[in-house]
Image (cartoon, rainbow, N blue to C red):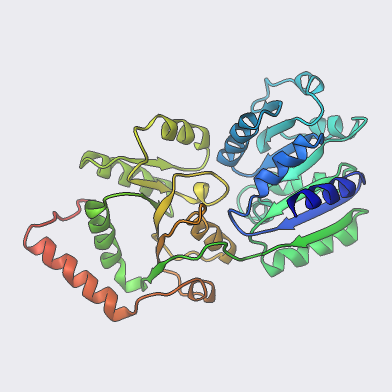
Length: 354
């Protein structure tokens, strides 16, 4: 099926004004599909909204033996791109994308395929706090270069906007839906906390990490300062932990590769909610209610990427959470918290100091 899909996509991408959106669940293998297209002889110009995703894709391309060029700063010359062998991969930081780069793409005898990974973030973040992402989407939309966009979580409003944009330009649209807003692998168990259970959530996480024997826990924080504070505290009491916030993707991956074994816990903002390959995740803690269902799905989708089991702990009470797996009731959570309080009272575990 994958070989047939690659053949069909190559026929579509031969049309200069084509715009193809592939919707598939997290861990489906969308990045691997791009590498297979490059191996078939089609040059891919790759853009991702998060630095960590681009860095991970560059590593994967090199591992697959593909010629790879990165545009990471204003010092990187476009002359290097002219020497790229047919079928290579160009990874461009979104901050370095410009009209000059787009003009270079349009002037090629065979225009490279522009890949917009995590397209929903270009639209969602582009209208909230990163206007550069929306500018890239709009510039690419009116260009003549074929576009291949990828996403696992396109909400209905964004699909409506996309179809409206197609009506305004001369693009040839195609949407391939192989599982939008779905998870490949559901949590084994999920624990849903209510807003008044913040203390219980924090106590259980402390107990969880103190009694953990194997696997890596992923803990999502709302703010960068929270990541720094938790990393500092848990390192001070002997846990092997690491943190990642926006703009630190390369440093995070380098740190991860230099660690002696997998970390006990990774503390992160939504910078790690998309695309980046992590060690097998055994538990996911989301420390705040997530308002955007697409973002929530991506965060939960960090688990089970190798078909391994994982547990979810969150404050969300949406239909999405209710649909993704079994969960214990309120009484079970209260009994669990009572057990932890007894352990604290008798000094079997110490009280967290953050």
